[in-house]
Image (cartoon, rainbow, N blue to C red; front, side, top):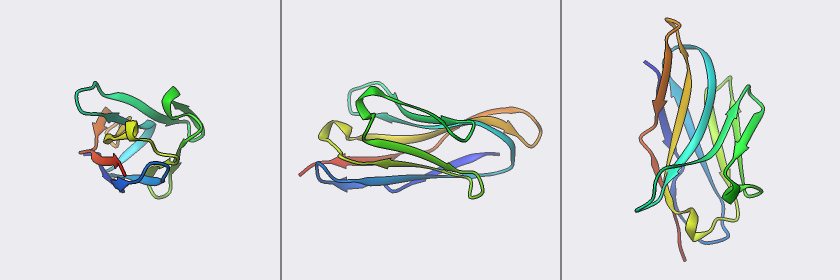
Length: 120
């Protein structure tokens, strides 16, 4: 069973940086896409960044130019580098993945989420 575990959340001042990491465990034969979503209090969950094919990426307009997403296929991790953080970036950030497991069944999994708080 494929599972995701996030790390790296915490409290940071406005203008600061934070790096989130998501580790994949379990056996799979193909990872179609991985991404980060976030949900702020009282708001719907939204896509932050996604990576597929190892190099193709897409970002929410609100984070373009400030956030970067990268995947290390050898380590089975996907990281989200967040720079120039703003109070409105405060949210629970969750890792997401879609692919095929070792039985060639499609899977879609979510991490448990990690809280990022941007405040002075």
